[in-house]
Length: 331
Length: 266
Image (cartoon, rainbow over all chains, first blue to last red; front, side):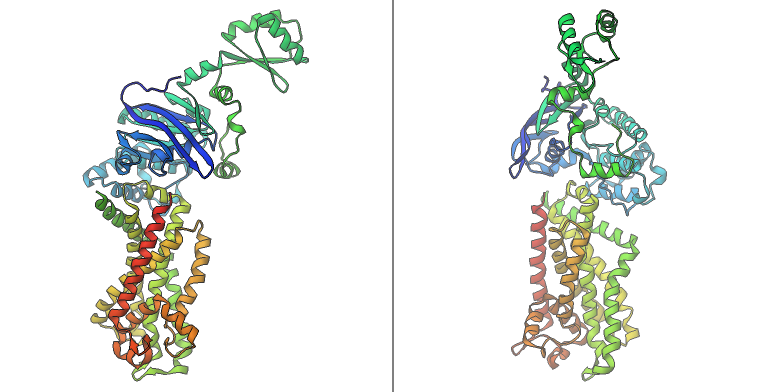
């Protein structure tokens, strides 16, 4: 498990904790994020992701531990931290009655960006997120994806060192999600930006250089996506058979592999799945109704590390709302 | 550093409030609706019944300054609704994570409300010639400080209350409960002196009463107060300067409370 980032750390977190009354939302997390890294927080809703972000961006005071960002202490140097970060929240934070341009200008004024820098930067960012032509329209006329793109542009306006993205593509359709990620990956190249991301989408987490799996307010694992998948232990084989109990014992006897009994299938891990399957099918004495093979995913990692699936968790009200509106996330 | 964050917060928040004000025409109309309605209904209803309030002062001339104060009240208290609105629509987070101080945010909201109140009052003043109310440059200049100080105090009250509210409906309901007693027991429609004791007591602790009185004295001078149309406690008739002191105290209290309430939320 890697907790020490290579090179100079842009974000350093030591034993950061936060309680709300008796509930410990975050129970002392520690990690470093290197400059230019994309760091992902993966966990279900209520795992402590947003609470951690809120502490790092000075919106919430920690009840224990410490954190520095761009060399500034999140509790003592709040203003310097705020200037160093850009934020894209889960819920929209735009003034929908103002135009895109007015929203950006407000942000520029609030961050004290000089006029000559401001206008050029606004244009550059609006062009990047392809909203320049719509800059004079009230934000309430924008689609969900356009709003999110505008928020990303706004978050970058004051040249932050770290961009926080709290569930950046929640409630967006797959195509929009992909295009937003294209912007983000492009940005990281151009602006030497460090990105801190929270998500409960596995495919989105794949974009991160390193992922911290967080559950119940604690970091359960921290590694690159490939490293995390390696923890699961090889490819995943799923077998359906009329007599699953007998199949489990034959697999144990013949291959020395302990399979897990599912509802109507059994699963086990094996290295080099493609080569293993023909051998398995040839040698197996019992009837087999189905057989499947796949690479481990971050879903499997999550299950392995926390003992439960990420989507077992209750979805937030916002999620439910989004889903009930029929444009919800497809898992 | 802290000072520059307060000043920047103040003007940037006030700027946005004004931007919203000019974008949303409906807001201009809705906060003028109540004072206009009161002016028309009470004006038409009472003028003929009551006739003169004092030599040379008819009912409209008596009531009109109070309507100006009500205009300030309805506009300023609703500074609070912009806080609730920002929270509901998420924009509050954009404001809270900016490198501006919370004190600056509160003062900016209050300043924005004061500027809006001034515009609303200017619109109401356009009616003065139609109503036969005397208006000159001296009166207009005299009104400016009164509007500012009254508006800041009421905006502070609105923001303070809004800090505890989570929904616009909740805030609106509370406003309805607060606004009516404030308006009807402030000496706008009748002098607060020759009324039942309970009404007199409530009216004289109502800070709006002093705002109404100050505005009225700008229009009618201290002479009207001396003949019983002003605020009298014991034998003492409140002067404009004393009214201003009461309003200043109210503004200091409500703005301090608003800043405190705004700072305590995370």
